[in-house]
Length: 83
Picture 1 (cartoon, one colour):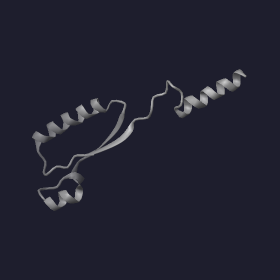
Picture 2: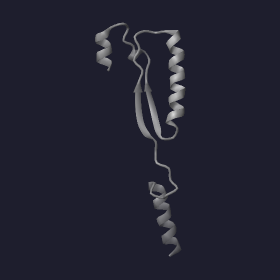
Picture 3: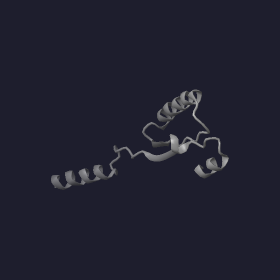
Picture 4: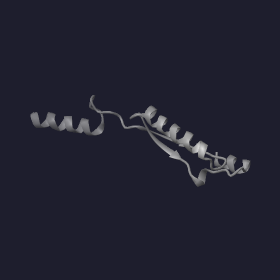
């Protein structure tokens, strides 16, 4: 009987049904679309990412899309395409 109960507890803990198990963070994706490179906005975006990480905590698994692939380079049509 003890082995059966211990086995059930291990199964429950492994699948997240045990009351003490924390749920996995929910995925969330954020894209940072920029018109052009700017040292000023580099700093703001860095601060934004830090704050989002704090706010997300263990509840959200953030993926931030950014970089050259997300530069509109002053082209409104490219910005619309990226969005």
